[in-house]
Length: 322
Image 1: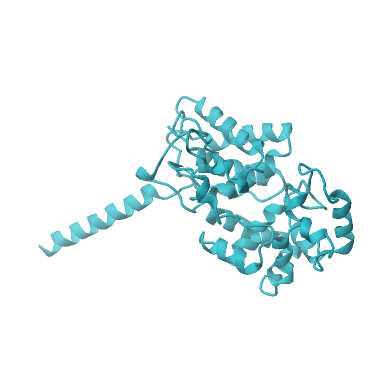
Image 2: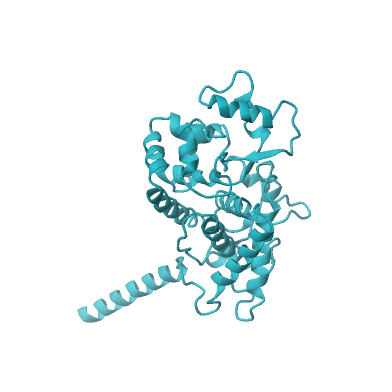
């Protein structure tokens, strides 16, 4: 009888572990149905980058905005319809570049063009793969993408409120927001390097360059910003986030902070606050350490709010629910 109980116990543990593994994200999740999914996505990303550089920051920002609201479930890609105003139409998401959305849509089409892959790969996973690829193709680290996310079943503009970091955030606000997503201060500082790429509209930092000029801002840099973003500037004008290497994902972002050339308050505070300054200094001089920390942080970000089982599905069209 004791032996029987032991067998039953071992069997139940095995079942429990199997269920956990079945629902967990794994790198080779699509090995049996779409083994070439990553190479298919990469080819689309490479093609898109040749068409426009905006593909890189656009895709990266899309992933961040998706994962921070309701988790990494491609809910940010849903188009508003009828009485439903979706996430993408929230004011905080209106500046998301169309090229980010287009990258995922084209990659999804390329994946579904392979018969064994058709309707087997989620938009959320395609976005995660494409994000890794734009980082690697712009000089940043490549890392293993965990797969197995399902696409979300809900996309509401109201869910975005208070979920995304603002340009004027201080360290406490940044830490609080990232902690809500299971991310540490170290993760937050690493992920902030996404601002090594892309652009910002003048109104996002205008208060820092008007009289009085923010004292934490490099005076020469402030003068340059004033000339590029004078008062009453066209609101569509955008400037590079990184004034030194704007098209390369690298640790120059942290070197800029050391020189007072963080574009947003939320960037520069990483250097001016004594709690985060040592990390900025370390990564400014150690690219390998930064890349390792960034890869770790991106992997953790990719686990936020992942949908499995009945909480999600695989969309046929990334922009609309099945």
